[in-house]
Image 1 (cartoon, rainbow, N blue to C red):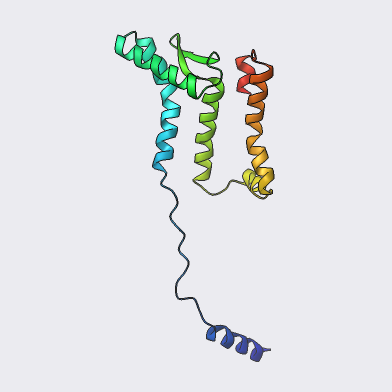
Image 2: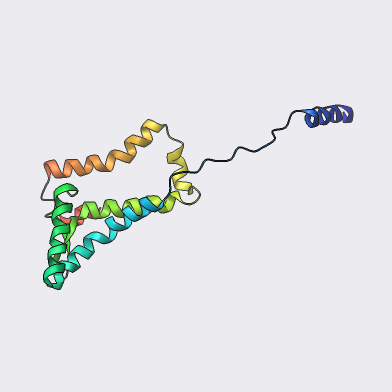
Length: 155
């Protein structure tokens, strides 16, 4: 019994060993993503605060930001939060989606938490469908229930 272990150990030590470990490749830099998320997170309330100041140049910049975001990003600009009686630049859903992107980034920077391990074990197509499901609900609400309340949108 000991002889077979010795032979096995000799075979293992005489096997060709890799000279170098595989180094993981460097991913994309995170700063553009973080800068984009920061603008999406802080831009809408800052635009509302600019509008609320009443200072001509700042108010114009706030309205410009709101106009650009509601034209090219936000599908329902009438459902915005208000800060100091001035509308934010995006609706509640867009604001919630930005917060969701931040949560996703925070979760992706550390080890996978236990609740997400189940999700990562699902087939790729099923993960893709479950990730897109909230956007389907978003489309249904815009299309069939445009007068939904703020409280319902937060759920």
